[in-house]
Image 1 (cartoon, one colour):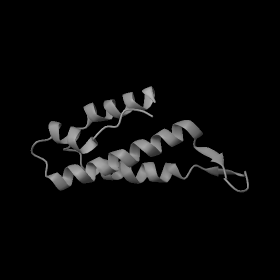
Image 2 (cartoon, rainbow, N blue to C red; image 1 turned 180 degrees about the horizontal axis):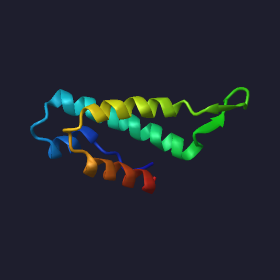
Image 3 (tube, helix red, strand yellow; image 1 turned 180 degrees about the vertical axis):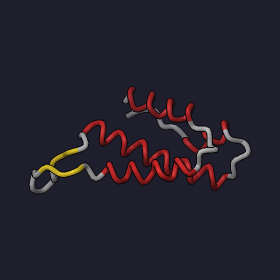
Image 4 (cartoon, rainbow, N blue to C red; image 1 turned 90 degrees about the horizontal axis):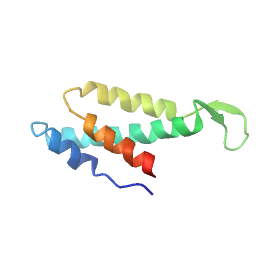
Length: 93
């Protein structure tokens, strides 16, 4: 298992003027976005249905897009460093 990162605490370090609820919302969206992106990277945009084996669009594509929309609306939050931390942790897992 990779290193556990407190996304909210790391975002707060880089965004002292953003409200704590804004940090929490962004952290939750970034965590879910990253998880979905990792699933798509691992399994592809098209994957097998778990019961039938038929090819289907990966359901994580929709989740990734939803979270990207939330993140995009919060463009004032600086997250480049935190995203690099998440990517680094995923690579070492």
